[in-house]
Length: 300
Image (cartoon, rainbow, N blue to C red; front, side, top):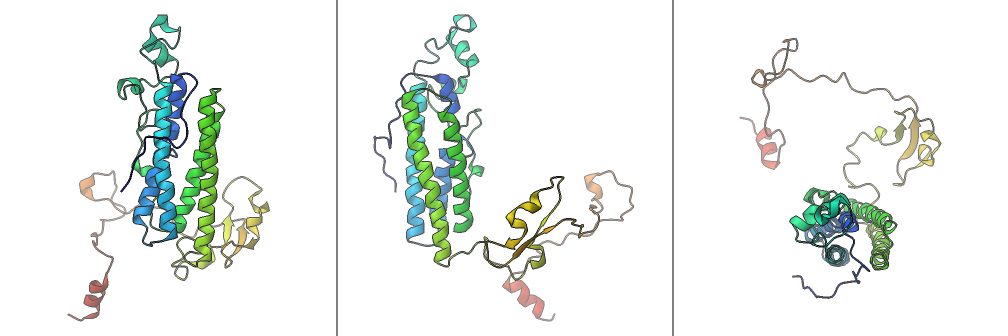
């Protein structure tokens, strides 16, 4: 259950309208690392968390805060759009305020579609996409994605901070910057605590380490023209997981055969000279569960 209050988490009061900046500010709402992304990312992480207690509560606290950030930014965008395009925002384009605003950098959809309000879209008008979010159920992998989201979000906020002189906008962005700072620290601290609690280690997931080809979990392969990757500490040290010795392979060689696709299905009409013969029959359902393994063990 969610409750809503009419009061914003922080003031969203520009000194004066600015439809061009409102267009730019959309990135912090509906961009790949905008507030809609972190809102939905954290909500789904919290809803899918399989452990009651401090980790789920942390996720849900931050997720709910991010809902408020979306509202705060949407309110700021609406206030920046006050009077545009219904009133003149530029003297360009022969005095036509609509054309002038669009030519000046305003998003016409903010007027045409949203009636002078914010959109669930980025600064190019591209609609927000649920594929932006990461909610895997593995808290170590998810919390690392959260650090990235907050880092990119803070970076974009910092850039937008330098694109305006409006004291009211800057005041709100100063608040956002501070919350992004704290959220980065929260997720980094939560990663440390997952490890201290023995729930996760360093590599995510901490599984199948005895199944993987461990000899290939050590060296950096030198596969570019750059000459200095071997000078980094990662080329000769114990790995952060405390298990693998990290090294450098200066001349890696291919371990597989030539990349060559199999013969095509004739009904797909790929150009083909017949040199590879005919395709094999596909085997569906090759993964075996418990019943499949039992059937294999029982003779016909």
